[in-house]
Figure 1 (cartoon, rainbow, N blue to C red):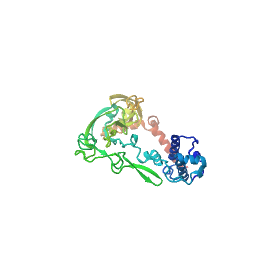
Figure 2 (cartoon, rainbow, N blue to C red):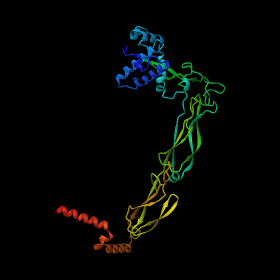
Figure 3 (tube, rainbow, N blue to C red):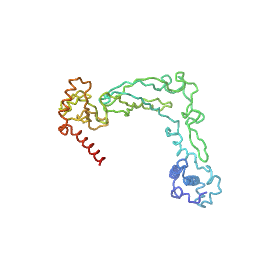
Figure 4 (cartoon, rainbow, N blue to C red):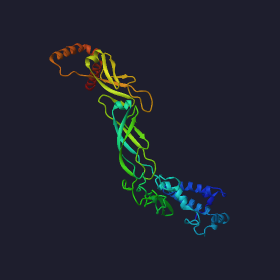
Length: 380
């Protein structure tokens, strides 16, 4: 038995009320319970010490003896500092403190029958980039568990009702003694429902739910992207215990586009141009999701140069400025030339080579100069 003052153990004054005493014990029991502190031997000792103190102080007879004689007044009393006897109501305390832990946190109100929410569902919806940017309404068909229309979800044959479970008295939970404390778990007879069905509904076979395909309209807002989810409240599976239905989450996947690639709020595309346009400049027509725009290409444009078309990107679904269209040009080398075209190109090549190379091809000239310097240093 602990030799510390029981009031000090629980952190309360000597005139503490029964309600405040219970609150103090609950707080310590939650803090030091062995299941929450598996690697802390000190916590286990503090848990037992708090239990011992509450056992004594919660009994008016033991508390009076303890107040008058201290530990000596309760050492020889049955249940004093030992088991759960003496009116300590320890089982009720453990039920209050640990009931939610062992029932998965899905407990209904008032300690009666447990009511469970229906399961959530997910539907994967694939849409085009155009629909993702502009927004769209889509109809989807989903298989779903819904309340049986014959028994109205009760699971019992029409004209009958489920009866209260005799094992748990309709509570849906039973107490199991595990060592020095008791825990709650779902009743094995009614599986936590608190009711049993002796005459099941022939359509749903007592399940209260049937599988049905339903059509829903989904409004996809403008600006969504792959990974976004739209929640349809109450469109998930029906509950099998009278609780609310779950939700349906529509997961968006945007198809790859043949021209555009999305990067956040911006759209990107690659625009091939011939080398003559790149050299002397010109004007190109480039596509956007809502039409075409003119793009001016300045003379001397190099491959991979990026042009920005303001406001032709995506308006983000969560707010913010509309993105831009980024056009990356790629200079295309001519192919399948005939002899006349080859002669013209060779003549053009000769006209910009030699002493004129530095002026017309500065990058190539600079690179060749660097190569020459590299080999000169190797020989030196």
